[in-house]
Image (cartoon, rainbow, N blue to C red; front, side):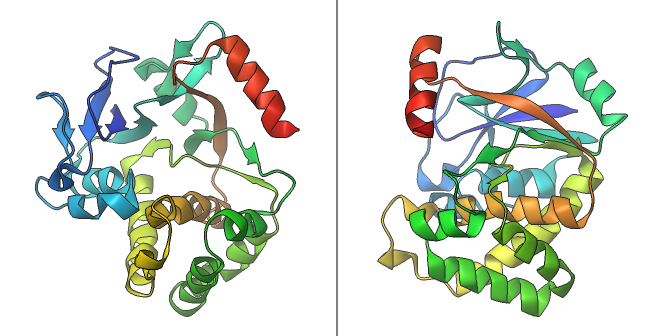
Length: 245
């Protein structure tokens, strides 16, 4: 098994356990990393879509090319932790133990400023993309419609496109997810959006994970996720208070 640390550039490793493998995404768009990084532009890949699919080009590459029986996704600045203070990272033995009792490991749910998932997405991203995604689910994945409607009214959810689960479950999720995203891509004009929102398929996929988990009644183990961005613990605490206010 492996936890893949997805990155779009060189970075100083946060954890050096060989259980963690670095995966460079957007290679076909010119992103550079260390020589020993895995790359998302080999074999079956969508590396060129990285500007709008973000970490999903790495997730696609793992779906099509990895043989690991268990797959995990971290990011170069964001990691699952089994203990927050002091930081204690997940080890292989921890994952094995957890997945004996649970189907999947996900980040603890995040709240959305008192907004519903639908309201928050439309406020910060795109009402057209949200509505179009709902239409695609209704037309091509109808058994998930109730779960989509359920998500629209939730005020918290799993985010970050981070997960750990067995490869069979991972493959099932990716097959469902990318079918929707590629259809959505055909119906979306990103040129009318800000550079931030041109990462649209990364944003909508965070919400879709909640739909899939809910529909399949997965037994979820949630874990803390820490962002390693150079801020001190004090500053992170202050920023959390500010964001809640």
